[in-house]
Image 1: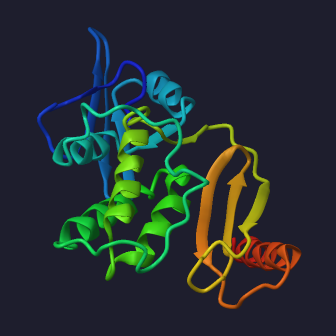
Image 2: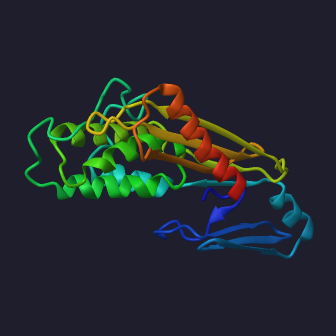
Image 3: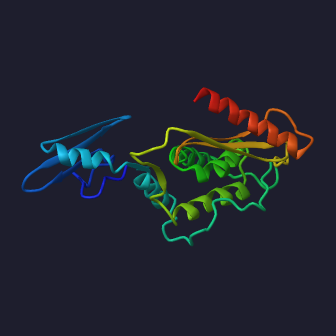
Length: 229
């Protein structure tokens, strides 16, 4: 979580930044984040109201930088996109990795990063198909995502205080993109006003003969999500 302007982290050496403070000669304000709850307190009601008007920006900057450091990607050349659309991954297309645990660990950490980064969901979803049969091609494609993350480690979600209470949904599909099963990928995202609140990328259960059929299946998944919300 990024602290509002003027607020500082109480202890910059904390692994998980959860306590933010702001103080002057006349007032003291504090925000404490615990799991999925937040406490805002202070001795000046005007300052507390002002903090509420700012909104919330959620990101995983520290986790992203830790991931880049552990994979030795901090000095790598940045990438403009997380996944090359021309690249088509498939099973048994190359020699299997001698040690697939490194690939599984990398993909697992990338999955956790999709909590706040919609733009990584499609790519990471592709990589998860090859957990048990990863090759050098799969590993290089996953590393490219790290090069993309390097361009914007603070990318995340912003929730303004004056949000519009209206749902907007968008869906799309990648027709027959899986070279092994010829199944399509459903993708959708839902906004509450201007704030992104739900998204998904998932392989469809059946093979669609036409691209329009795949599009309708994606739209159906989006409608179910909207009804649930």
